[in-house]
Every structure is written in C-alpha cells, then in structure tokens.
Length: 290
Image (cartoon, rainbow, N blue to C red; front, side, top):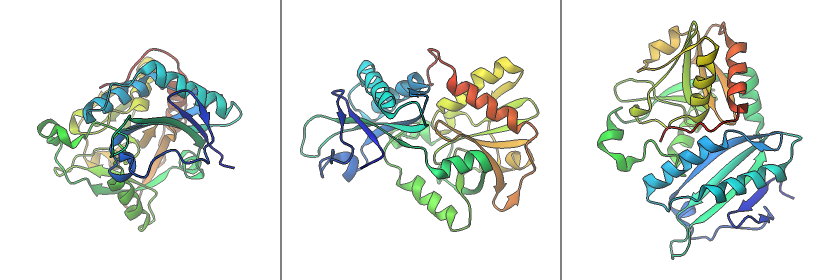
C-alpha cells in the first residue's frame, strides 16, 4: 500500500494507489500546470497561506482559472490531518489545465514522507555546483511569457541540472544568469550571511519569490538581523560567512562546498537553523509576494 495521502478538490480522501490522471492530462503531456510544496508537521500544513497566495499568482500567470482558496485550504488541511501528527510530511498542491480533449482542470493535494535526501541536507549541508541558467536578469520583465516567477510543473530543466551536478558529486545547484548574477537553486532560495545581515537575490531578477525566505526575513528582522535584497555574484557566496539554500520542506541546508571549494563553518549556523524553524512554525496572515 502506498505511503501517501491523496485528497481531491471535491474534498474526498482517495486511495493513492488508484490512478487519478488521464493519459492526456496536460500536466503529463506538456507540464501545463502549477504546484506548491510545503511541510506538514504536527498534522498541520505550515505556512499554508503564503503558498496559497503564490498558487494564485502562478495560476494567473498561466491563464488558469482563479483558484478558490477556501477549497484549496480545506483540501490541504484534510490531507495534513489524514497524514497525522506523528511525523513530518511533504504536502504538494497541484493544479493542471486538465485533459487535452477538454473538460475541467485537474486539482489535488498529496502528502508523502520527507525523503532521506532532505533529512541529510538539513543535517549535513550540501555540496553545490554553480550552473548557467541561460538567461539575463532582465528577461522576466521583457518576456513575461517565460513564466520565470511562476511555480510551474515544467521542471525538466531543473531536474536535468540536478542530475548533471550529481555526476560531479554535488547534491544541489545554484543557477547564475548570463551576466554572472546569482539566481536561485532548482528547489530553493539562496540566502547568505554577512555578520548579522541576511542577503538574497531580488525576485525582479526572474526568480521564484521564496515563501520560506520571506518568512525568515520577517522573523530575523525582529531578532536583530538586517535583511536585504541585493544582486549577488559568485564571489559574494565564496566570501560570505554562510551560504544557505532555503525552502519549505528542506527548511535550511547549509552550503558546505561550491564547485569543489570547501567553505568554512558558518559562525551563526545554529541560529539561522533556529530562525528558519521559528519562521515556518509561526502562524499569521502574511502572504508571499506575487
């Protein structure tokens, strides 16, 4: 039996071992849809509201129908409750354009176990390879149809980059623009520390606005940290006090090696991990930027 929970938007808990998608669903044949992934802890979906806000923004960018947030909220809460409070889970919200032959959009929520890869990244940090993303930081403004700020199902390039990095012994990737600016990871936001200052690339550079990074900034700014958005170059990462890949399920993974260069221990590592945990556990009405 599958170790997974499946809830459809009609609020039915379904057998995750029974096929749900049709063979001509556009999520399958074209990657035409959007998704969000977030952490389930204690039987609760963490930071659900910012993720729902970003789901709406991504759906709007793709010309999908405007998601009914009450329906998605209930589906996510049902899935998290069904998963239980005993262990963490990874909750995924998926909205597809539906079947190529026509009909309604496809919408569902799933929860599965947090992978060993993620647990290792939290515990041990990650080695990364810096790879060219192949576009300028100005592309998002000049070519909005590229969907650079949307979280779409079209993840083939991201997964190919991770596989390529793995051939060199790296667990993750940091993309750079054609000008050499630091962008983001395939599944994460890049944050560096300089003393008590946190810096991350601006979303205007064509990166996905990070819900966990934004939550971190909200919490850290009240704990004596200065939080900034700034253009970063690879040299800024090498000379930083600490480099982090921040995301909803992995939470905080310290970058311990870049392109084979071993980075020194981050002086505030324990504090950063604690701040990220506090940020994702904090309830409130804050929303992700759209």
